[in-house]
Length: 119
Length: 109
Image (cartoon, rainbow over all chains, first blue to last red; front, top):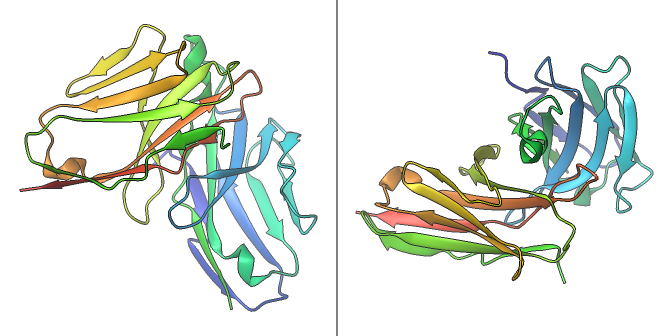
């Protein structure tokens, strides 16, 4: 399967613990996005990489959140000192600027997500 | 006002019906528009890109109305398997998509 993969699929943690999620994008995609989604809402943008460079980070993103994409391939999202409000589905998506027709370079291909529950 | 707005529904339709959803966007500089389908507790999957000239794929037709700043999705001959949440997204030159909250569709026998 050459789609986007995420690990773990589920994570249950206690408040105050740190958690780290991994995303492996489609191999030829140079853009990687992290989103958070809660019930009844659409995906909410967290941060975005083009290759290894983190180009944008949501203003709503707490300092407890950090993301890396050290070699421009896989990415990690870490949440420090988790809070109950962090409980959500964390989605990773990748896209490519190599598609020929202009609007399509923002097509997002999502991974299965990591469902985080903070107790 | 949210950047991208959708009626959450649910839209409850019988099999074979035609149903249409609209999605309004507030950023007039938006350039890219998409429809995604999301099944319960699954990730969103790309359904269609929305081009200025519109886009049709089988039973699905997407349109863009720049003057009124909305995109639409039309589903003809609804199937039970079309039951899902339909998310729209728009993005400007920053490559950061903004998603609506989704419209729930329930197709019943």
